[in-house]
Length: 378
Image (cartoon, rainbow, N blue to C red; front, side, top):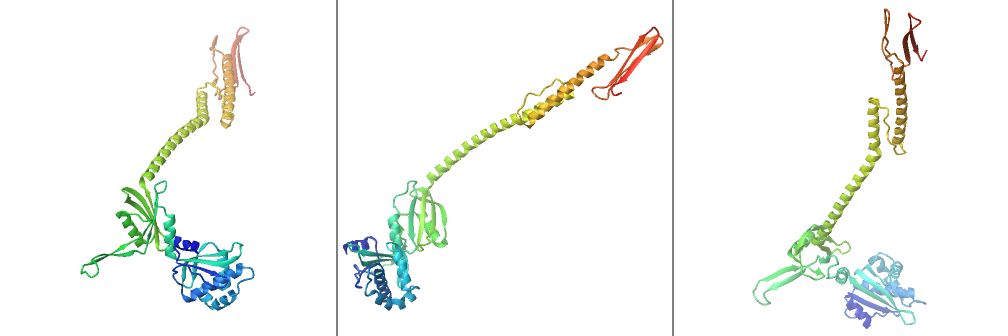
């Protein structure tokens, strides 16, 4: 009993009830009583649980369940067997419960003897808001987190405080509302204004306020399961700004590295693509100037390199043609021929770089003049 009383006190239970196999209830301390019909169902359920987990069953369980069966479907919306099955599946856990006047959380468990035999069923109950309040007080730390973030909760239902004249005196009484803060700590006027604003809007909001003498980013949201509570997060702006500054520095560094890498890549591409194109352009200028000795330097083994090799072979062919044209021009007469009353002269204008025409004139056998013409095509 002392251990269970400590449980009731430590966890701020609304009621704690223990029942044995004979159907005897053992309420601990001052319980907030349930409605008569609800108490009857609770007793039947506890006996039903004990009946299911005990070998041989519990004599009074069937009778209690039969007497309460009519109330089961009315108050719980399910049969006694289904309800008991759900509770047994969640033994040892705090679960939401809607059963008659029970509208909150319950904790069911089986107490066993040292020999391991089930002897009692234990039930602890809480209303919703007190249970949530207990949970928030226990798990919301008063100390800020490592990054300076603080969490707090504000209950929607304020306390009404009276101040002013004492009883029997004709002094004006002042009434005020005080909202419960979890964990209990002083809050700034700007945070109070933000809280009241969230009460009105009822939706997630954020802003910048003054808290503990420095600007903070505050985010507030209404509870989903905790409908009568608002949850707030306060984070100092200084570490946020420091993080933003560090991020900017990283972005700037990344930008410089990107520019450097891009420039290096452009140089490589220029060397690979633009340099061969420039060499080809110079080769074309050399062809235009009839400088067939120009040779494009050796390139990479790719499409541009193949094009450069073909160009060099073409230049070799053009150089050979140019040499042939020079040789052919050397075969033509260098000056006109004057013989007696005859003057002979000739000129060859080929249609291509290397013409196939040939002519010559000379004097032989005294007064005879010989003129020779020819064409490689016949």
